[in-house]
Image (tube, rainbow, N blue to C red):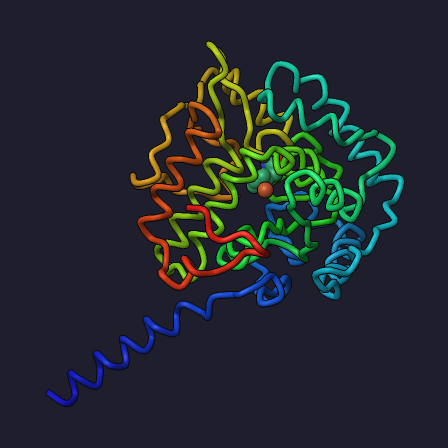
Length: 323
Ligand code: TIH
Ligand code: FE2
């Protein structure tokens, strides 16, 4: 009996320690301790793998992010002519698609930002606009954060953003986030109050969540904030940042690839979500929302079902939890 008892006590301890302490503010979340995948170590299938100059540049930009402290101005990056060329190309191609492919909230918020092909916006200037519109903040990050840290950031209305530019060999699609994705995909959406609310709901639910729940929330995040689509009359429009920053994926969402159309399914946060991957190219399945308000309401009811009692009494910079 003693032995069994000792083993189960040990298991319980493990289960306990697998959920780290709940962060009380953005200062409790690290932007550089848990970088996953890519980061500065590119895998062999990454378009920049054989480009040493590119890898050096990425490490330099990643190191800038690591020294940043929340509340301080975000370091500016002096982008090179090649980096600006890539950004300009992505922007010029995407602006032609937005009127027909992007949701109306995106098209509206986009106007706040005056993006130009010859200037890569600095995170600091963008964060200032968001602070004034929806109260969100941008924080630079060295690479892909661990999902718990990333989602926890959303609870404090903080969006962790990369600052490097995708490899120039394929500006139409990159397998990982880069500054073009963050700026053209996420930033205008975060200036929309209803969308910002949806992202906040996912963040609040992630505080103190079990590993299993973190995984499910990551998928909910992926299929809405990253690859979500929304009905507008008889049309399907994109609101997910992974769509809005990739010319290739936006076209694929509408027209399919090699004669195969993607599938569209209704969002139900209580159902098991399909597996997600950075490695499989374009999505085969998109979740279709009636509206942001409807998607946020559904996410809220799921989030309430897993919310930790300690989080209920937390105060998010003067605003109590709103689930
Ligand atoms: N595929 C997107 C792009 O080309 O901009 C970037 C990513 C979004 C989500 C995951 S990777
Ligand atoms: Fe993203």
